[in-house]
Image (tube, rainbow, N blue to C red; front, side):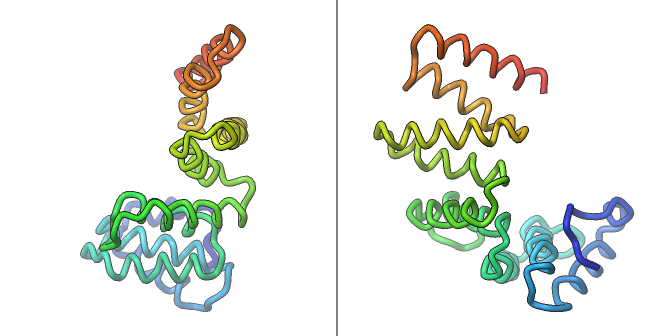
Length: 178
C-alpha cells in the first residue's frame, strides 16, 4: 500500500484499521513513496486518531517523512515549530526554514506556498511583501482559499491603490463562493 492522496475512504470509518494499515505502509520501507504514509501516521498520533495521542511519536514520524523530502511533512514540521507544538519550542526561524524546504520540494504545494508567504509577510520589507504576494497568488491559483484571503488583505494593505482594491474584491468573491 503506497499512499499518495490521503486516507482511503474505506478506512475513515474504521480508525483502528486505518492506523494499522497506514503503519504497515509507513514501516514497509524508508523511501519517498512511503513518506505520505509516515506523515499520516504522525497525524494519527498528533490527533489521537484511532490510537492514543502521542506527541513524541508524532514528531518521530513527521521528521522521518520530512527527512525523505516529503513536502507536506516539511510543511507540517514548519507549522509545529511556528505554533510550538509536538513538544517543540516555538521557533520562527526553524518554521521558515521548513516552509522553504517544503516549497523547494514541491512547487505545486499550495499550503507550502501559503505558509512561506506568511513568513515573508511577517518580515514586512518591500521585497518580502512582493514575495508573499507572488506566493499567495500562485497558491490561490492552485485553489488555496486561505492564500486568496491573505492575498486580498495584502492587496488592501501593503499594495493599496485603486486597481488593487478591485483585485481584492474579485479575489474575495472567489474566496466567499468557495
